Length: 369
Image 1: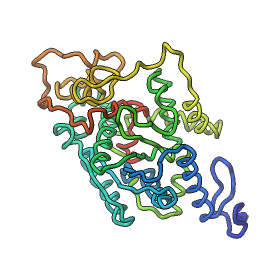
Image 2: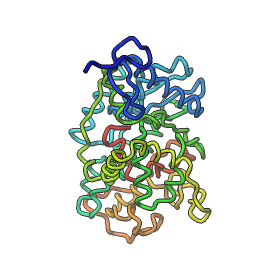
Image 3: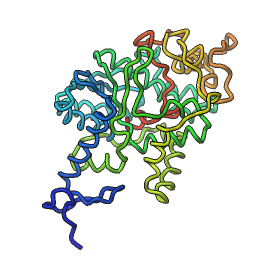
Image 4: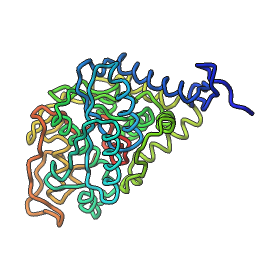
């Protein structure tokens, strides 16, 4: 059976049917429609004002690659300038290849690139070191928890170094729906309360963040990358398979098979969610160590590093943990412990590293930022 004509231009043969609408479009019309929808999201949400210097979180994966490409196409319409910021988490055999893809993108698109490393920012800790430290603690499945928190802080630092006024990340609709499911399954009212909308306004002096691809499905992101012949890194991180996010992803696939609108329904539900006063998180204060916004005495990044440095990563993760601001008994450093360096904070008013994406936010680790 021959392919139908494109429902938009009525000239070319359709190359696909859009996964949700079923509309038959040719390659050119699909890509133009995808870009127009991202533009509408940015303009309608007032996410990136004219003159903004935008730090694009670049992991080398499909989402950040598509985001950078689309924003580069839209930059003249929006009146913004772009700067790629990549994070080197220190994952042997994985991150080097992903960063190579980022460098190729930067050269091809003639965009400036800045790379910041965990080892530099966090007292020598890399994700490989974190994995070794947590391996015997019963928390080895929490590598993505550590990485999501530290990556957020590192991206903020990189953005400040390049003089950015805004930060954008490539989270798509499927990512956000997974996050909503994760937070419901964990009963995490605090993150449910913070997870709606298209980003954060930058309260407390932190840089505003937004997600221009939040309403785009993962399938269409992949199709756009295919039709534009974008070069991206697609291997999964070695630490990702054990992440809790994988269970939410499997559940979401089952829900979407039964109800195709399930992904966007969950995203919009988070936007409209209203919690009872008793369930709302308390207003954040300032981290006693680095000055970042925090809901406890220590922000989540400082708490995680504190647990690692003490050789007690259990301190920092899980609902049954001791208070993150408590001091543990002396003399119990593990074999992987390090001195307690102060966390380098980009600003005394930086945002708490507890991401609204959830503590198992492994998006960045898997190259899907």
